[in-house]
Length: 239
Image 1 (cartoon, rainbow, N blue to C red):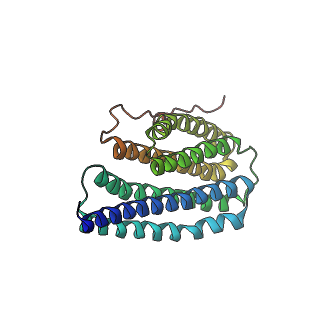
Image 2: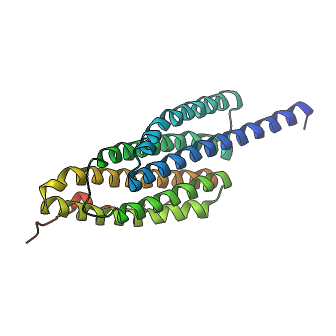
Image 3: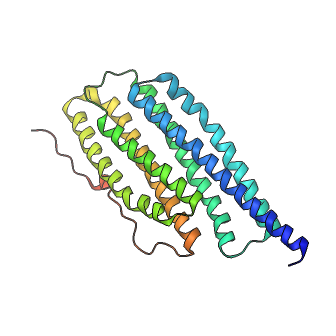
């Protein structure tokens, strides 16, 4: 191989490594944002909720940086095969991470409103759901950084559990609303928080599918496991 060609290959490898670093950094930012939003909700920490919302523009800026980097790689390197899949996957993953950041900010905003209410019930279910979502988010970011399809598959399969918890919370909160009209406003905000967490789980699953394709060159052939049945739920008023 000519010396200049070897130099180009090494340079391209370094650029791909830099791309992975950027995605991992953005993933870490979003992980922190989701964790902050969850803590703010559970601990009724208004200051932390405000910091979570203020964090969102940083995630948006990181998305733009990755997009520009990807466009540059595509224009100058004309990658093929797995290199092309990784670069395109990075672009898709940044979109999912940006949306996760938006949902985290929404959770924080809702928690600020909840601070005005004295809730007659615990947030144990939401706290558990949040923990599972955060675990999946961390695992799928690690999966991308390590080209680990097993971790990606674990996230893909475990999203159904998050959906089931969401279904249970949905029914519970609707019941509280029917039992006492004073619960309607706080429960509505809790429903939105639960849905935001469920959507974060969905985007983590999107990333898992993208990672699997980037590594193997094959899409996941099975139908995605889904457990969200809230759209069809029938909740009867208490007797």
